[in-house]
Image: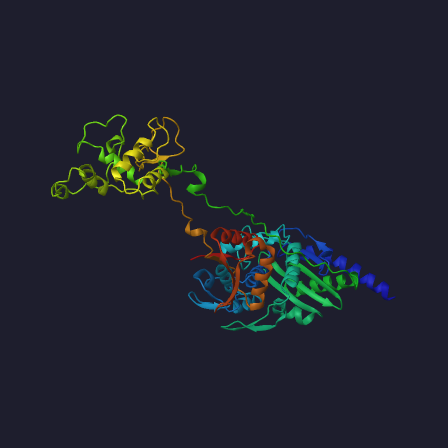
Length: 547
């Protein structure tokens, strides 16, 4: 008997749903009922017909506000300025004045509970800069949530060309509010709230009080849209979300909604596997660049030629007897001979290096008249004193033997004996006269890589320095968060995801007046920009900061 009565009620509900469009005159009718646990439809009628959503639009406005709060872009106590456009919105409204500043928490309460149009517009302008830009963001978010037949033109839902949605899309949005932001969802079940400048009452109070298990969500009405409602209710383990568009009155809309929910609760099973919605897939273009080293002149230009100083071979040190020079000087018949004698060992026979410091003329002029025996030695003394002479070599064996064989003999005689013993045929000589004079050291800079016959001027040596931006004095900030734990969680998760770049970065959470701001420091400029691009692709606010 009970089973027959339930079947009769279901058939009566279906007949009523078929007759409802014929009785409506304000706007086309549409309805959609969904099992919130699985997202599967239970009942649908004109579910994809594009209609005016009216103030059901504010569900998306609030969804965007909750998203901005969770991303750290704003806080509940952030103060939004009220523009002239927002203050001039028609009722329903909170009564905001142009130039006024009001906290976001009060704007959310006014938009969700009282359905205030001026509060909704202020939220949109505060988040996106203008209502048009905010409407575009709302549409993009709708696509990401799977709302394929929805387009927004404003934040409040007043009738405007090109502003439309469907019963199916509004039901999807209601389910998203329940699952994506459970921490804020209870605001839709409040009967009243403090909106800062006034105490506001809920426009959905009648349905919340009348239907068992109802806990939201939003009402809407315009002359073109009719009476709209997206509602959520729970009974036991079951939860349903439904949307009615085009009701003829508040009472008629609430009655149809109650019948749709009653029939839906009898059709869905008590226990079912819950399927939570996935995170929204934003349709923004994702651009990720690879980190690149900035080009420099040293990397693109050919390698500069190396400069090598050419040096002459060091002179060969020759061991010579001390008396050989004396003998050569003694045989010089004239102080300034015209030519070197043939076959003799004389000082003038060797090409002497140019003196580095000329002798003082006064010293030469004041020199005393030399004796005949030391005349040659006296003439050579100024030259020998002016030149930088090498350290005297040890006495040769020949001179030592000659001195040992004739003890007490005349040194000049010993010198002549040594000179006669020196070969004259170009053999190895131990005397200064037989050694070639060293070539003067060249001071010319020669390019070692220059080709034969290439007389062009060498290119200037280029000094390459590292750019200032290659230092690790850069960092990134990642928005604001309401708690330190959330900020630190983001830093840890980001460091694990991008360990190649952020592994050596310093993590820090700053406690500011607006909230907790996480940041990474000790990065290069290229890595900081790359990190921000990756965060932007994940819809996370990021800003590069440098020195």
